[in-house]
Image (spheres, rainbow, N blue to C red):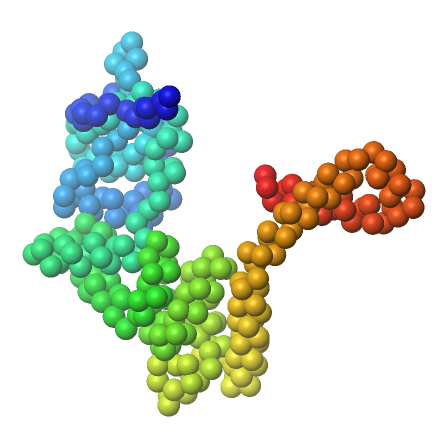
Length: 294
């Protein structure tokens, strides 16, 4: 019988005195001057604490260790608050909470902003809650204008630098898709990498092919060479992608066969005496496949 999943905290929110909440790490000046902390302060000022703090059950002196929400707690302290909304945890392991939660992706943030504006939420309030100015908010609202739907689908759950979308708009839709694929395969979603791909993009693949590319520090000859190299890289990538599944299957089947083969003492002894180099290669294949499986 399948055991039911047990939630690791109580389902109701309690207002606990801040003086009884014990943080597990100090708040340094570097942390409190960070952009992330500033956004949390702005959000609390505008809409309050959306996500309760997570604390352990009280000890003999009714004190609670803080498992998640150090920045929120510090922001409340700086505002002079006396109480904080908290969830009581049944598990004192911080791994359970936000350390393993995926943060809001760039495209998802765009959808959230658009929906809030369409529902009549003032732009000033949204900008303040997100720790940005109204001009930046307006840019986030139009983030996907001119972006191919296929490229959006690839990047929808990624933490992408917002400037990447400005670079993508300079490419035709099929090239935007190829660029998004390449960034995902390299797990690199920086504007610098996107600009490098743009520099290596052929003129005919640009949104405005009649307008010459201008990339700081790159000469026309260098751009031409980058275009040729990127074209070759794309061809190699497509070729590997087309056969990757079959290659992995053949490797797994072959390694299992070789594993059983050299497990036979007679065969292993024969190979060790007559063909030690082949036996070494067999073992390398088996070991490599075992590491992949782990």
